[in-house]
Image (cartoon, rainbow, N blue to C red):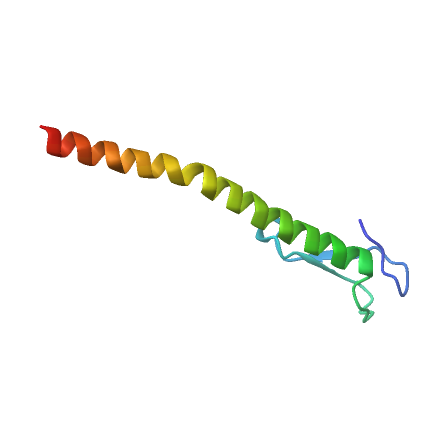
Length: 78
């Protein structure tokens, strides 16, 4: 669990981990800007998500097109 950079208390998670936008708050109410390492982690996670989404779309798109062509071919061939 990350620690507050101001007071050192353990931060509490806010939001749901499945949302992808979970963040942490200090239980003592300290205001702080996210450290650079956290910002880098967030940026890397977004880039990896976009790359994964793009690769899956590129891989699955030809299969869906081939299925549609096969369905039309079978429909008009009968």
